[in-house]
Amino acid sequence: MKISIQLPRPPSRDYDITIGPLPEIKIDGKAAIITNPKVSGLHLKNLLGAVSAKELYIVTIPDGESYKTMDTIEWVLDRLFDHRLDRKSTLIAFGGGVIGDMTGFAASIFERGIDFIQVPTTLLSQVDASVGGKTGINNRFGKNLVGAFHQPRAVYIDTEWLKTLPKREFAAGVAEIVKMAVMFDAPFFEWLETHDLYDDANLEEAIARSVALKAKVVNEDEKEKGVRAVLNYGHTFAHVIENFSGYGNLLHGEAVAIGMVMANDLAIEYGFFSEEEAERVRKLLKRYDLPTEYRIEDAEAFYDQFFLDKKSHDGQITFIVPEKIGKWHMLVDPDKERVVKVLKKWQAKGEGGER
Image (tube, helix red, strand yellow):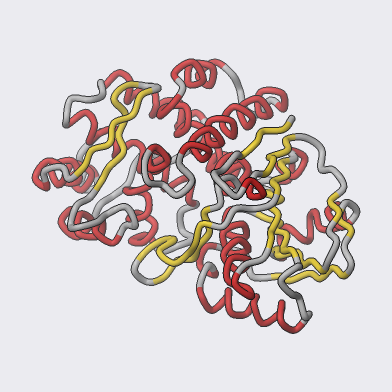
């Protein structure tokens, strides 16, 4: 199955997302596979059997969100220069979202931009991170605050890679699938409520439906000036959670799951969303053992951190919240008092309060 990303001019930036067994990948010039020890130990041999290039190099970086830094990017760039890659070379991102983000960012700045290919090996990266051209790294101020929009030349999604994925990382990907359904597709959400994603056929269908939804959004709004911002449902809260928790203690999808529950609470506070629909979302997340509880230490400090989010501007914060399942609402510059009121509920819960 192929799903196309069709971007504004120049048309050469269009590319396909291929869902199914990994095909042969032919590269005319030099290429470098960027991966980590875990993925390379499990799957590199299979990827090497599918890739042909004039010269092919392997660049291995440590595994984990804590390594998603400028120091690591500089180390990767040094290796590319060591191997004398040039403007006609191609990078291959072989791993999860961290590898995809970092490879894409390295490709965007190496000799002012070279091609890269996404071969995502986690469910989260297959349904979200590998599609759409967002690249970046973290710094001490927050998540993905340094980066670029740099579209891949192709994305190859093969569910075979997922068979060695730990259950916790699989669930993190489910969170992004749920996000897409809650925002854009009520029938898809209802389908998720009645279908088990541990079943291979159901999983492939869920991936295809999620990717098709994201492709439609990216085709309409490549650089997040409109509807693409809706994909940040749960993320504004999640990025603060990750920053306060320490990168790597929660998986990104786990933080997004909590963030969606928080966003639902804000939607309820504003009267956009019902308690019943919020409970349906929570129940679906919990079915895959995703966290839906979190202890906020200081509601005011948590609130202040929102202003370091990429989506804040001119001293205003924007939250994406559901209006109902399948329909979104962009809440721009909400009253601080109402936001803090919601945050204080999450602070009180950690002090013995119940949900």
